[in-house]
Length: 181
Image (cartoon, rainbow, N blue to C red; front, side, top):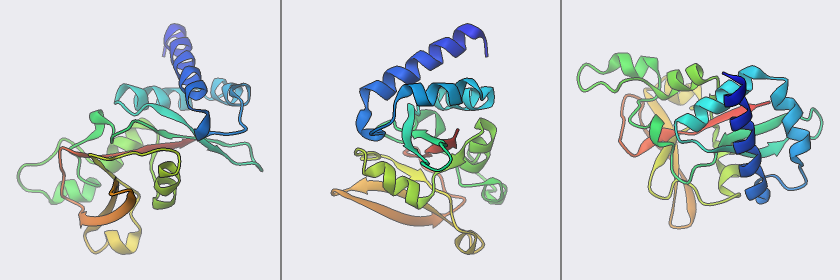
């Protein structure tokens, strides 16, 4: 990442942070910026989130450690991360019409994690997301071992958690990343 790209990303993140204070009440950008500047790997992950349509923003801070949590706050599941099955095992299980990758692999390449159900529900208290799309979420091993995977969306004013075969993929399903800095 060049110095110019770094400066542009920081300016973009700060502008988004200031535009959406309801996502991080009682938190100042002056607290967030030094954490980002000390973590070039986190800036690179945030750049990848941004480049794929995620619109990352701060959604929380751990009062004990000061760890700041970023996640994708785009209104719909990030456009650059859709049409993916759940993980590598699911991708390998597809014999035809394979997607180009999986949500778990793309997240790992970006340096982020898939949101948990709890994180997804917290995000939905900060706005209305995935009204037309859905997002894969981290799936518990007991569900995954049976061939399934979980995804969420918001319909009818409620957040729903669903299951699907992990090898499935849809043009309107992506994933939301989360990053602790």
